[in-house]
Length: 275
Length: 206
Image 1 (cartoon, one colour):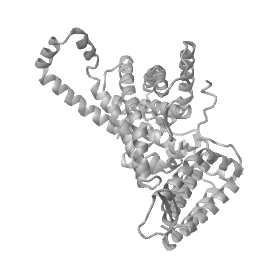
Image 2: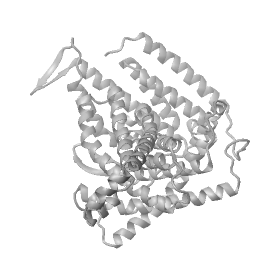
Image 3: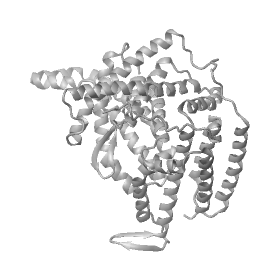
Image 4: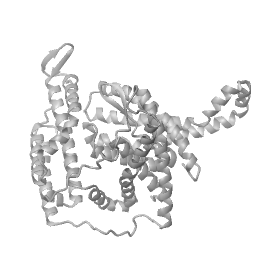
């Protein structure tokens, strides 16, 4: 069991494209706008527009399209199951029956619902994947911190919140090493983690979880003392080594996103939803 | 609102465990159902709520939600309303249930001190000894159970409300996955809280 080796935090694919060089704040806001628009999309016209736009982003990001599609592969079985469930189980009173099979009947409404839901999930997934593919974790947290800053005025400790996220990301690898030691120690004592039925398998997890949590809490106590003795007082007045800078490309991206959103909102409002 | 260093660090480290359990797939229990596996990734969130209070529970839940949104394990988690929003409540519910049960527990133990002692005297020492092991674990057990149930019910509720799965399917997943998740989470919560309390410098601030 090599636990630390297959840990990928975020699936960042380093690159030099325009999208990679955009300010993380621009990308986070753009992703959020796209997600909100997706949640309101209920016609095939809007989804074809969204497809067009995501395709353009992929093109500009320099990420091989095959790479994005491959990321969707593990989702496929669940997507198919979701589609079938909607097809047979979603019904409206005045709909035509497409075909019947045993006690199940597929309706036109069910077909549209199944298609829309699958498309929505597919594009939601693509948008978040594109964000994490083109933005490193460090940039994402920096961008998040900067975006949350105005919320300080209503009393939200934004920098402290981002600090917890940074601690979490930093400690994943440290704790992974510890976890690997625990698992190996247990295996050396003869525990076979991949054998037995699910109750036996679950029972074997308990002697792994307890030392993991206790070790983590010991580290937490040490870190608390370390931070307090260095008088950490949160984000107030704290400066950064690297400050985020908006460039001309960000302005262009903003114009593109705004124009696109206006078109999409117009389409969402005017085109009749299929269901 | 002010966040103490203690709250920041504990939420961060519990968040790290959440992410770790997800990426190593250690937090998934292979349950013999068609849908695959149950999850106990939310246990650190429950612990955060019970050990450090609702704020830590909320922040740990947010980290859990954010991570499952950015690296979705199932397609509908790409919807933030399914992946992030329900997870914010896990720690808060766990804390509330723990807090209330503990209050009731102490009040009951206090008022019925004498009759309880009499009953204990009549029992054989073996049974009394076994029972005393369960002393005071009820709040943790219920906190863990309700925290886990919050995850199951709210996530599947959002999945249904957003229209990703019909309600019949959600309910059957809820029963098939939710029940084993609830049992394992409740037992784990008790074991972990008891273990962690031994090494903590201050007893139970929550």
